[in-house]
Length: 188
Image 1 (cartoon, helix red, strand yellow):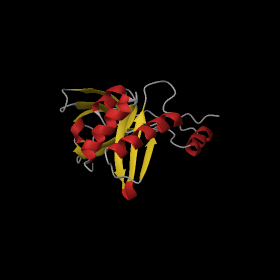
Image 2 (image 1 turned 90 degrees about the horizontal axis):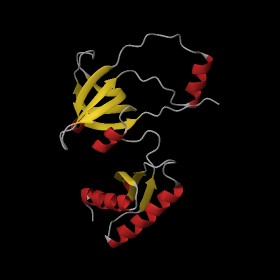
Image 3 (image 1 turned 90 degrees about the vertical axis):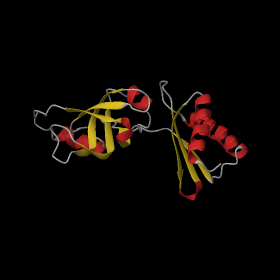
Image 4 (image 1 turned 30 degrees about the horizontal axis):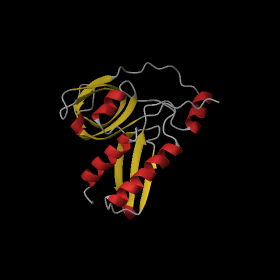
């Protein structure tokens, strides 16, 4: 089986049959197949979860004659990719980074529009295949590394009035890639 779409469907059914959420499948160089899984239960994905899915997929790939050299099963991490409509619903209210295929024109944007957006997911509406994302665009100011967090504690900025978010909507089909923005707490 070399068709990536058919393989994705097969892996998705297997992963979800084991009680996990399928996030994505990637076929990479040198025969690497990377499968990302998640869970809605407290505690997230563990090493035992990855091992369980890996064992099952190894058997599946043997039976289905899937050519691969290495299999990697992992969690999506703190900056989880947003791949499906259900992700946008599940993570409504969370901070996200979005790249669109083409610039989005909206009131408050520069004339040419913006292709890359940071802000908060408001929600998702519409029928399957024609979903529309509602998104509050603003400059996200979160510490993304411990060093930045430490510098901010040492040199706090003066309270500045931040501009109001710009509410935009765009078809889910126009999203090239998107992921959550982690709000990490580096205070010791």
